[in-house]
Image 1 (cartoon, rainbow, N blue to C red):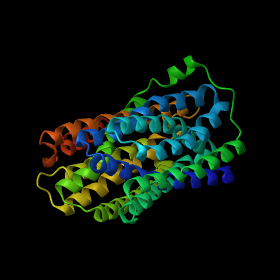
Image 2 (cartoon, rainbow, N blue to C red; image 1 turned 30 degrees about the vertical axis):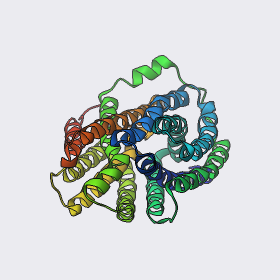
Image 3 (cartoon, rainbow, N blue to C red; image 1 turned 90 degrees about the vertical axis):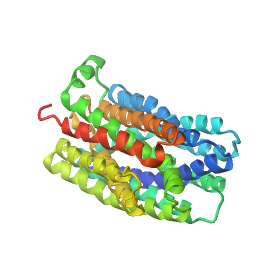
Image 4 (cartoon, rainbow, N blue to C red; image 1 turned 135 degrees about the horizontal axis):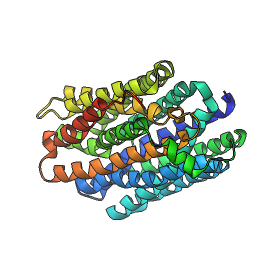
Length: 379
């Protein structure tokens, strides 16, 4: 195990997650209240961001298979440019341009983070599940820290977003140093061999899980921030506290899922966390539910979504050829789900359906439940 570069990457994951946890809710509130945008436009921030990530996540996975020596170019430079994009956003006075810049941020993130996840698994070897669990757990704690700071810092929405942007620069440097210490691997694999390896029931099911949990994940971000505030009356402080508590629970679940997967295998653990996410979403979608159910549902759904990430982003799902491509494809499938669901939920909300919890019941509960039941007994 390459410990020193792994430690640098873990530190980068934590710092950039704090920055993201600060910037994303701040940009959502800035768009909704400072620019007086519609709920659909605000929810589109998530979709735009994930559209960008979806497009370049596939590039990350394929490039890591076919040209492994290019990993440094795909990771460190885009991570630095992302900070510049986020810093500019609060200067924009049109919601459409904010949505467009979120897509640029997503494009840069899709190049960086799937590549980093592939490298983490390569560095960790046989303990890739535990290493990725720590990686995602640190990301969860970082986002929760940023969310809590967003709720409690006495700063305007634009100032909070810019603070997050500045915090994105040090992680880019750490990633560049870590990748410089890590050998690029072999000379790549043929496209035909790669395509053959990707044709399996297991890969198809993992991509379906990623898509379903991505659709739920899309409802747990900007849409939930506004939904909980306008329907349940959660204050900015209460929202920050709930996001922090959910992040702590997801931190624990994420650590447990990857370590357990190293012992019993990835697919069965992935099926369990998918069911947990479906139950949490059902609680979120209860018509006329209480704030207690809202909080419990959000925590459980967050745990399920977050605990799935060390599993669907593990290149050891397919040891050897194809593993890195699965990481990129699963990133893209999750991003597609996060892209679609806020648009649907925002439309339903604007037309009077969102206040009854319909998006959570339809998009969040049913799809993960169905996909979990499709668990393949054979690859």
